Image (cartoon, rainbow, N blue to C red; front, side, top):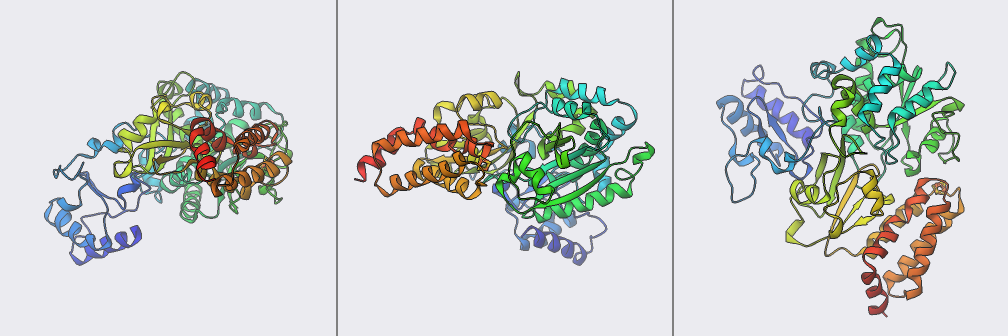
Length: 511
Ligand code: SF4
């Protein structure tokens, strides 16, 4: 639909004789998915929502030809308030801070000039000509940036380990294999701002001594792949990628590798196997990829969101990012807010923002006036948090302490009508499908838990099944080879802990 709107706007501008007065460009995601498609008109800052292809005629006729806003398409706070609300007043954006998504919805992602106009590639210039690798690592350390892929490992340390391993051949990988149900942060970041990832990868290459980078991205993301390809070619044309970058003598190239959609390939050792052309299965650590990764060489793997922070840290300084967030979790976090919430979309907030602020202030509360029941954070690896957890400031540690995890940033809201047994079953079915089968705690455990949950859902459950679920879940958590199995039981364990009565109701009432 957005493509049709775009084409219609161009056709109408031509038809109405104003094609020289207006630039019509595609941008990345504005984040406010609930109200899409969105058309923003600058410099007036008119924010048109739920635009239909046929609205192109009136937008051009009113806004461009007559200089008047189209009232019926403007975002309104609520139905009672028919007056225009300035973009900065929209409640969806008020508590957000867009660092990672700084360019999404602002620039044309297919234009390197627009990226450069927003301080793009300034960080790379600094990294090549003004800073030593040690200084860059120090800046990352000051920033407190931790991996946004889920584990929260300090980024500076990963880079430093790889940098210190001797050798001429090293690799830099961007992990864009986003596979959590309901998560689309990385896809949107690449679609909206591909050059930020390229810039960060070249900087990482310079720091660790790598000359080859790979973006491992799932094939189901065709727009992100296209924009990445365009950005790589543009960067090469501008001398920002390839041989002798900006005359610095440093060479670095990037290749795109497409993943076939296996969730486990987001795990870094499985991802490496996949790039090497093998079946994507995790291998035991250590050695860690930073010591011995792709083809046995030191390899840094960072996810998209982590990388998008790098140019900002170098241009604004590590201390700037460190001012945002909590004591141990610095900066912002992007969440894909979905489910039974009024304003679904991509949300970027400072670490330490509470779940209540995200769901009720930014998200506008629960759909249809229903009661909040729980929120699943961290995708199939996370747990389900409840009313009592809503005021916890979100960071890596607090979510883990509550029995969930940051994961990559999926956040699915549930209301009073959702059944926790069904929710647990859904996630466990996903894990059964996605388990690579290499280790028995995960291969057998996920199937056993799924079977017991199905039995309970059918009304054939027994009270002893709850103990069995907990026993198997805990064994999987301790003994699985990778985090897929190690966290697969989280939704089940957290719902038994938080909604035990509901499980018991299924067992007792359905007999
Ligand atoms: Fe494979 Fe699961 Fe074992 Fe990971 S935990 S290696 S996905 S079987």
